[in-house]
Image 1 (tube, helix red, strand yellow):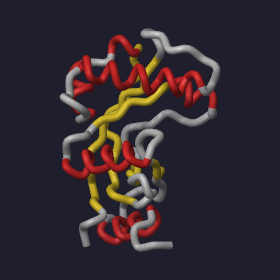
Image 2 (cartoon, rainbow, N blue to C red):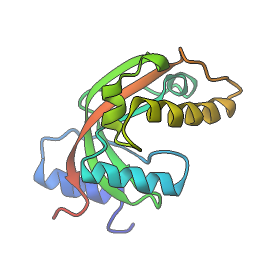
Image 3 (spheres, helix red, strand yellow):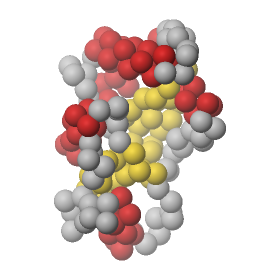
Image 4 (cartoon, rainbow, N blue to C red):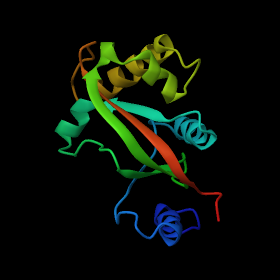
Length: 155
């Protein structure tokens, strides 16, 4: 295990926050190493404080939805733990009702709703095709906000 594993980052966080829950999820953004690197850096800079995901995946994989108070370790493209975030808000809305505020908080591109829709329609379309489903503008999207509580460069 390297010094930047999710487990080691969590153990460092727990020494400073012994009352934190005893569970976290570790994951990275997107499908590519480059995207995971880019988005984990946006989290570290404080630019990215939200994300969205395809509600259908939770149903298909029988996974629980994100919830307020959930701790997540954000990994980069090499699966190196970069930060710990806690979920502060979750809602499920149709794709075409995702707000401009949410798009801005995702911190990507020019932070506009138009950019968010372009990027996420392509992302969701590819994701859905792998499950033999089609994209539609009314598909449910899980919109999640979070705040960073610990960075890998902290002692």
